[in-house]
Image (cartoon, rainbow, N blue to C red; front, top):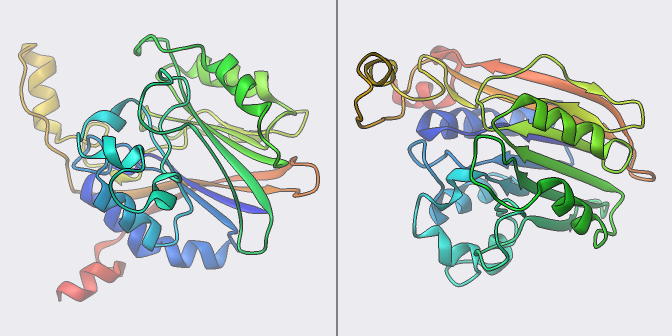
Length: 276
């Protein structure tokens, strides 16, 4: 099974580069399963039902999130299956280690178009983030229910050590553990000794003429004055950051992991061509 995971999609710039290049990436890398972290896709903060449906219409199979999943109130009922397509809503995950009363779920089990079973798990770290349930034990509990051999884990965390620890903790028990949240791609992708693909942070899919997606001047003002101010999503220099994991469907082990960083050129973008 060939799995494409696209890191934190930030604002319109991130959505545009994803929609422009996803079909080609899926074709060129013979992708069977596409997963996208979409928690920053709505102007940098949260995700809306409309954006989720747009992702699914673009052949995204599963959407993971993180701490910003609750930023748009209209997503609450959608996550609970009360607003929109309930089958699609099940494919939009929130971190599994939030309280059980929170809308939505942190696990999705499905099958590819060829009938191969897979599971996607989404958890959130605790260091320098809200004090949720233990993400390590949350994954343990979910794995007791999972029947698929191929299991992909998005660990949305602030601290690199917590993400690395999750990789080692799950090595040999899941197909892949990838980190999200910091919006900075790391160069440590590898297959761990027992067969789990790992990358500390896949990186942001969005505007890199920014400070982790936000207009530079606004962030500089915050650092220089320590005064609050509005943050707006940047638009310039969009990159798409992703990993491709090749997995053995029979035993769930990863054969390889490749880090992709696509830097969009305005003249090559289909959307740019449409505007001319």
